[in-house]
Length: 211
Ligand SMILES: C[S@@+](CC[C@H](N)C(=O)[O-])C[C@H]1O[C@@H](n2cnc3c(N)ncnc32)[C@H](O)[C@@H]1O
Image 1 (cartoon, protein in one colour):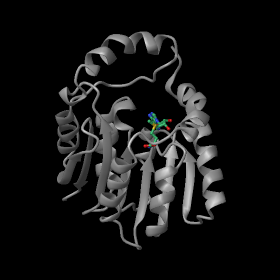
Image 2 (cartoon, protein in one colour):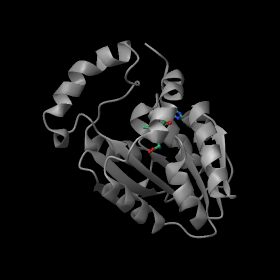
Image 3 (tube, helix red, strand yellow):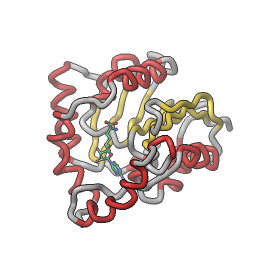
Image 4 (spheres, protein in one colour):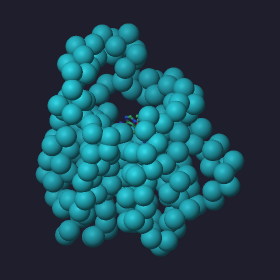
């Protein structure tokens, strides 16, 4: 079994070249997210991958920090930022646990297609809560591969995932139902502002730090 960092380093070029599964769902996610962003905001995106989302959102805020444990993902994100001439986005090689401890006055922290991959994710979300500004937002989207919305495929995933992991063809991934993500975020103290499933197996949540 390969460790998570090695898995995603190897995956990076393929991930960068891959087609979006549903452009419509992705654009809807971006539109909903953009509706919360203002030009004075400082934003952190954990697990930013090759920076596709970061580069779409950065022009709408003051400063954008993208982090990822994979140095290959970050290398590609930096290249793409330079090519696109985006000057207010910075990319750092940093795990989610360390990213959640950054004390840089972020107004918004994001994680897309990330939380189900992070060990001890409860502690990570607790740390995000502690360091966000009061009124700050956590915006996330998480595939829930054990949800009934995934139909019969959820049984297939459960059956073959251990083998795929063993031969290095799948990352370490938690199989959750949609409601698990709501609980995870609420348990850290956040108040949900908006939630939706687009696509049906992915839970999108915008949550506010109230205290
Ligand atoms: C499925 S990709 C998602 C990338 C991007 N957020 C997106 O939606 O396209 C998962 C990313 O999370 C990163 N990742 C996985 N576990 C992580 C962890 N514990 N800390 C930081 N990044 C992590 C991987 O390196 C990879 O770039």
